[in-house]
Image (cartoon, rainbow, N blue to C red; front, top):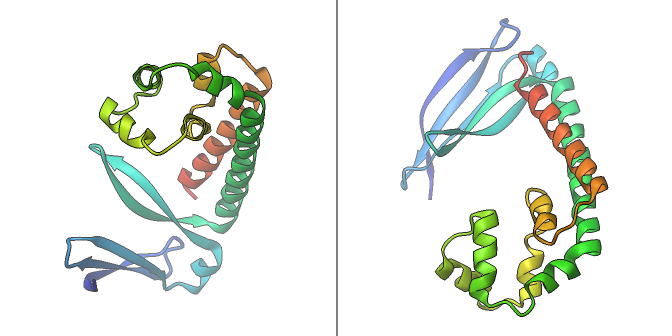
Length: 187
């Protein structure tokens, strides 16, 4: 599959003294992409290109914007720290509560498992659940639920409240929010 350049635009760079170029491409399967290139030597030193996803009417789209290098670097550090905390929380939660999570479902039918997961996590249809669990041991499938977005709900299902995990998750979420605010700020 080859990409064909459809058109390009020169736009004013952040400092206003030069430009950056945006090239738009399509392929044979109606795929689209763009490439951004900084033409300004001053801005090349002071800015980084930030790629992000946004949703419009339920459809995901990619976009870009120029961010000051120091904000970009700080946001990257905050995200790394957030991910480190999330990984620690997931590892700790698995170590302390995975056996309890698995035993909660022990003896339950697959349909009963699905009903709990569907009610709590809006799991897809029963037939999709059967397909996802067909060749997996329940322990393997249930371990996959230990994600940063599901830990509090998992603990709620098994009747556990762990204040340290809640504090760590809140700290990691706040770091993510701070990083996003840096990337969205006018700079």
